[in-house]
Image (cartoon, rainbow over all chains, first blue to last red; front, side, top):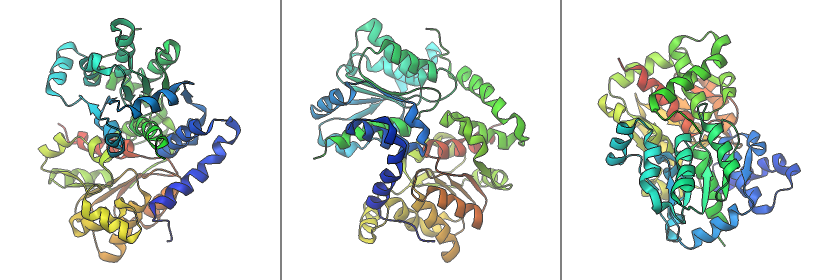
Length: 208
Length: 208
């Protein structure tokens, strides 16, 4: 069987095949890039009708990334999926505390998820950074609480937790409170590749 | 807003909410566990009609895992998503060569993807192991070629690459050739969480 083996060609052809799904949406070019990369990561054009991007999300993120901001991830899969070489060139790091023994102990004692305890542990370190949540609704709920009650102030939330318990609700709350710019996806769908793809689409916009 | 914060409760409630989507399918209990965990990872019940599991897949995998077999992943996100602590208790490791400098060099020289070069590099080390492909169709094409042309013999292929270029075709070829037992998903959908969820569902079956 013949198939394309060149990574550049695979990506270019993928984007060509995704373009028709976005044709009717009148998206600005940069927004369109975020949509394309999410649909590419999921193999699922249905995302086109689920994605919600705050009007300031891309400009705020690009400015912060150029200033070397850090990215705070709920799980290691998100961190692993981010192009950390590109991020490091800009002076930023992708961080995740889910495997931290102190965080694990705290989560166990409080009866909460480790990713929720991890966000709490980051605390004011989140100020000015980008949050990338691809797995845990509880992490997104906690970030919204930290902003609401503890005056923590990230510059952008990529909030795409996945699943049947709390995921849709946490993203609805993000859209309703919208305390900072966001990239999200309505409903149960989402996941680490969606968070990483969103993040990487922003990183690649900075390439000249 | 009230939400469930206890990880055990979240998982139990998730599985309850997923059960109705599987009700009409008459799946054996262990097969049902693989389906549930995939749907859970994607937040997407549509997977119920896309999943294909070879009748011997689960028994073969459980036997191999009990014997300490290794898992060979196409990308780091898959490796990261696998419960490696549980795997290590059984004597196995999750391996990925995509970041190996030799593999990167070989891929560049041949004009192929790094994940394809990585599978070639594993070669006969794949014998008896489980392949977990969550991203790259080219890696799945290459594994099928290694089996067909170079007598390599993994015990199971979890083949769920994602996307619009080659993903559906590579999975169709896996189903058509079926040289060893498989777990796969028809069409464009798939991804690292689907591969990791499939793998973890097998690992958790071994818990007593």
